[in-house]
Length: 358
Image (cartoon, rainbow, N blue to C red):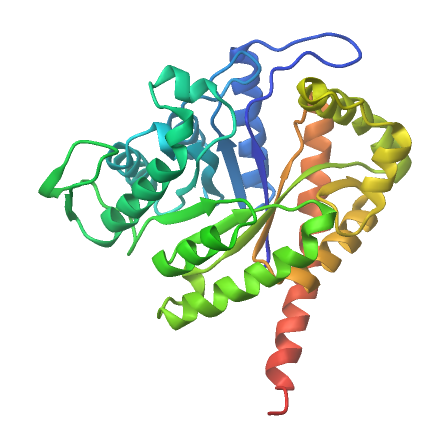
């Protein structure tokens, strides 16, 4: 079944038009309310991501997700990404296996190397060492998931000699996702270790992404991994409203403020409204803004091209108000997700009924 989900970093940026800014308490309160709503309406996944700066309220992902687990019943709860490079794989596994037990198997963990410097400064890791540290740590956490006793002698943390890591995941294994860019090495590693992949691509890289996903699944199957260990999720920045034009109007100030901030130190100009609309209209882009009909068409196109298992959306980009986010979640759950699931079911049934000629 094709899954639809949401992710958030607990955005506390000032509103681009009013200047209003949420406190950490208000942001976390509203975030938990949105997770509860998404669960009640039947969405499949809610993820939170890690930052360590005043613009975001989420720095302790497992704590936020444990609170969400106590107020939800069926939704999967995971990390949009957590910075594995500056954390301890043993402690992370314990935290998320505990969350998995609390939630009866609904926990997931997405592991990235981070593109912001603050966690490296806070936890005393040299940013220039991030690649080899990440490579070593993701191998370790995969090994921990495979066996409750672990021996490790690398350089990224103190050695382990046949030690037990406890508790274990609720089911056979913890759902571990590699959050990755579009590199062959990253996809090959995920295939070798049996890790799911969460990624995203600008429109210009969309065709290359399709090739990477196909190769990843082929190599994972060659390694003997079952299909449910080789899931692919695409991420997008999104806003869904009742009217496409109004949705574009609502989201543009937030989009412009965020992208302008990202470009500030690169000497690039702020995006124009015309550029924004061109990007949003491109069926291959990861900026998904419009009414339910437009979003369904765009996601159906992308799934037909990539064949991914899940699409997740960040809808709180640069201080989108809670009421607007709630309405977007309602449309996503009540209109978009059912239509895409129906399409997916029909496509899979047709494929089984009429197998290809060999």
